[in-house]
Length: 151
Figure 1 (cartoon, one colour):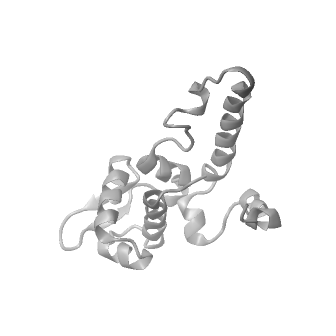
Figure 2 (cartoon, helix red, strand yellow):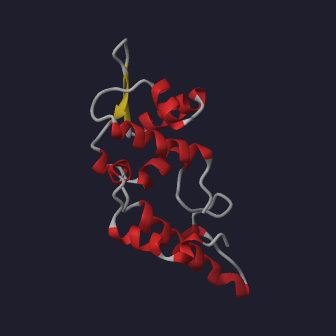
């Protein structure tokens, strides 16, 4: 799985907002805390706002906050808000693929891959990451030495 800088920044910004509680946080404070270019972050926050993940407040006391409790925001929600579907092949959803001959089973492989990506990203919430307490299933995956192998 390749995660774009945009998705990475969106996740980090969401976790940063979660760590600040209910009050609004200025975009430049989030940018500094997470080393995200401010202009890029502002675009990302706008996309997250349109997706209902963050809310904004104008004025001197304004800024951004999560639009709902961080326990209700899954990492998959954040990624989809800025990137679209979690898994696709050349812009096509796996279930819509059609291969000929011996390659026919590739569609099923890509559907299974998406299911595994979902198994992690739909289970972990922004609150989990902000608290540094990942679900047991995810911790089990991380504890496998093969998970850390760079191949």
